[in-house]
Each structure stands twice: as C-alpha cells, then as structure tokens.
Image (tube, rainbow, N blue to C red; front, side):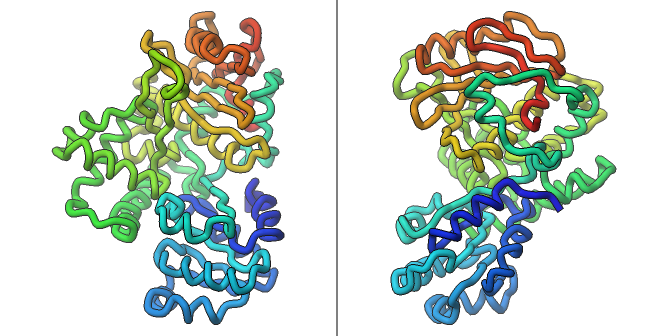
Length: 406
C-alpha cells in the first residue's frame, strides 16, 4: 500500500476542524485513506450501499442525528445530508466529527459551499503521484521557487518515462503490467463515470453525446479551449459545450487551466487550457498506445504535458506553499505550459519538453513570462528527458523531468 501525501494533512484537519471532506476521482484511493481513520472510533458508512443511500435521502436529519462521529463515503450521492451535518455541527462543534469523501466536486455547488463555510476543510486526493509511487517526499514546489535543481541519477528517461506516462496514476491501472489490460480498465472506468456519475450531478438530455465529446476533448488536451469548435464536432452549441466541460471537470476527469495575466496585462490570450487529470484516461479516450507513440512521437508531447500538469496539481494539493496554477500565452504566440503564482505574488514557470536536447530557443516563452512578471519572477524551468541540470541564464534552467519525484 502506498503512503499518501494527504494522510498527514487529513489528520491535522481532523484535529481542529469539525468536518473534513476528501474530494477526488473515483478509484483514486479516497476510501482506503478514509478507512484508515476508522480506528479512531468513527462509524463507516458508504452511500454506495443502497440501504444507507435510501435512508440518507428519505430522512437526512434522522440519519445524521444518530451519528456521533462518522466517515460518510461518496457523500455526493446524497448532498441533502450536508445541511443536516451543518445543524449537527452547530449543536456540537467538536473537531473531527465527520470525515466525508466525494467523487464529485461538491464545492462547485454554491448551496453546498455556503452551508458548511467555516466548518469544513476540503482536501483534494488525485491519483498517485510519481513521488508517492517512488516513496519520496513532495518537494517539487519549493524546489521550483528556489531554483534549487540538480542532477538526477538515475533519472526515469526514454522508454521508462514513456511507460510511466502511459500508465498514469490510478492504483488499479499501474498494478496491471499489460498495456491492453490498463486500457481496458480505463475504458470501463470512463464508461461508468459517464453513465452513472453524470446522472447523479446533472440532468443531461443526450447522454449518447458524451463519449464522443470526451473523445474530442482528448484531442484537445494541452491546448487552449475553443468551446465552439469542440461543440461543432458533436453537433452541440457553445453553451452546451461549456456545460459539458464543467460537468466533466466536476467529476475530476478534466481540468481547465486559466490564463495568467488575462485580467491584468494586455496582449494576453484569455482562454483557458484543457488537461485530462490522468494520462492513462487520456490514452484510453484518445486511442493512444505505446505502439502509436513509437510510430508517431508527436503524440507524446501533449500527453507528457498533461501528465506533468497532473503531477504538479498533486504537489499543489499537499504543499504548505499556497500556489495557484495558470498557463501563459501572449499575442505573439510565446507560451509557458504551467505558471504557478505564490500567495505573495511571486511567479514560477514550467515548460515541458519531450526531447533530450536543450536549445536557447526552448526558453523563449519563459523569457517572455520573465519580462511580463518583472521582479515577481522567481524562476523558470524547462523539464526535459535528461539527467543533468543546465543553467540558461538568470533564474532560468533546464532540469530532468524526474525532478518532479526526486
């Protein structure tokens, strides 16, 4: 069993907060992590059990009234429980009373967010980070802002790197040695989410459109979102395309990465980028395989960028350093794949390169970001398929992709 970075943070939150909510995609390890807390005297209830689910929906007040301290798994299946939890907490404000898990991002619903404001801490649990798989601490965010990179040996490179990216981070996927078995699991996972989970959070008239819509999104992963163009591919409107993307984001299949400086600086592309949360799911939706990547290496670049985005998001979720993720692209076409803005306004940039050879031209986007950020620019790095750290000027350098988990 892997040691999850979030475990310590969950324990800290339960020690001083009445309600703790673990959110993230299905099968990412939320239930396993929550049940580890059952030994502390908490009753475990899963709303995947039809009996518990019916009771919670029919009489949420009575359901919660009978609980002193509990773990409630998959709480998004009965969001009406949250108001009853609020009432129970207001009567008995002890920390650690309720540990909830959800496979849909309930905090995107205004009524839910308002009902437990100030009473609940939310912790995101995504699929396994490469650092968790390797059993190493999550140090990348601090390393990036300090520019404290060095040589990584042995680094995961070439074919080993490709295989790690294709496998993604879901425990059940990486446990399968054969690629065809991983893809079979991922396709089954996507089908279950699109058929079952979508119905629980929204009323959608044409569910048959969603698989094809998701396939189209797989072709756009790592690109700036064009809602109209994506919608046209399946015959839906701009607004419906926006709605579908928001729903898939709520279920942790995809994420939108906003543009840095869009509100403050002129000549910036304002549209967000789109990424899949897990690279194995991206492969399943986009029909990407090791054979296809070997035959057409251009497929690997966008796949690697989404993989790195996912890795960075996993580090952000547990980092003591508060940062917000963005992308950067100006009207001249200079871009940086990932921009992190620290709470104090300092900026760090990450450019992702699938190759092993570095050139000065690989830093054009980072230099444009450095100029735009001015004194707020902390550091810019190109992550590449190598072992050595290579400085490329003031506060700029190339570092191995393995720096993400070393």
